[in-house]
Image (tube, rainbow, N blue to C red; front, top):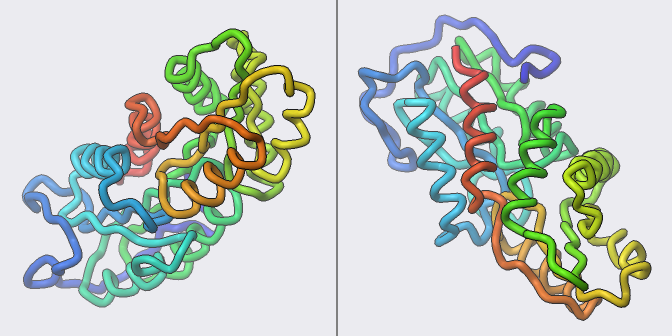
Length: 261
């Protein structure tokens, strides 16, 4: 996805740094198209998250950048924010970089990330940002299929997928719920934590399973989505992240590949 204003810019800045920075994970530069891959999202609580670790490995392998870095776009103040990471890359002489976010929908956090990329672009030869997970009709269908497989329908159970708040996110959730209904899954609700309790009143005779519609299980996912909502609903929880699903990771990787020069 190309942001507006365009995230590509031309510059004469270079040469490359003499060595990779200590905060980057390097891959052989001889096969690299990019100087850096920046994976941006909520970093709080990601240590030990197997799904996020697998996503980072698969993105690095697919993109083949000289260095892979992490940046923060939201959540608790853990890790360097995206604009600082891009500024440091630019200062070290990187010319070509790709930003991939772990955002599910094209909401506020994705817009903030796109703005950071646009602001930093004049210091790079090439700088792009990939689309969030749910960017096209095909993405909604593929995500619905992955969730349908991971959370099979069970008698007397309703599945409540809880994601980030915000009007853009809620619109995306409605589209994902429709995609699940197209697969015959009328037992699944997709909404924000604020709206789910009221919607679940019509399903009070069924057991509820709360599922975080988030790429990682950081502090926000565990405490603000899973624990609080489950307590309110007296519900069970599904303690997994979307990044643990191979089909979801493949979709994120596909978005990244589409932005390669």
